[in-house]
Length: 254
Image (tube, rainbow, N blue to C red; front, side):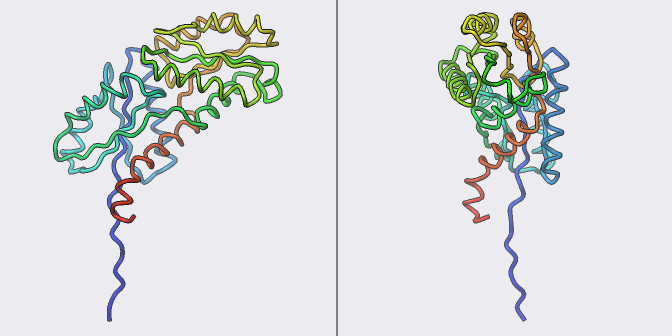
């Protein structure tokens, strides 16, 4: 009697969330809260966190530890909203130093994604707006800023796309490196005639630049919270993880 042969599925890669790190303790606390939410959405997936700077554990330390345990496959997911310097240079350089017995694939950055727009709107509604307010409210999409033209173009494109969902107007703004600043965009929307102006920080965790965004929102009517551990952001992390797995799954027919 022949027993049916069961397909052998590869062990799922460990997800390593790569965060920038900050001297501000709120940053790491928010990252850990987001990772806890990711784990709750997929209990069978091992999720670790590594920081590029300021906080521990470091990314190299996490990779060394996993390799020492016998882990062979890792997907490193940059906790970034745009493909700027960190995604193009810093993170690949760190991952290239991983132990040779460890296979490390870098997932795509989080943005742009409809899930991020949904998370932005969630934060605005939590701050006091309602869907009925959209047509009379101008929104400042306030990001950290970058010297990378690609990243700047992506923020501008997101603002244009978001405008078409019913807001009175949407303007991009930047806390550093680029213009306009948050306060300039707020004044522009007031001058445009929007009944109210809201600032939506397009950042993942608190810190120096998010605080600068908040200071620039003093003339706004509404200031939303950072994206943080919003459910949509956690779902997006898993989406990017699954996308990074696809080539390997196709190769084994899983």
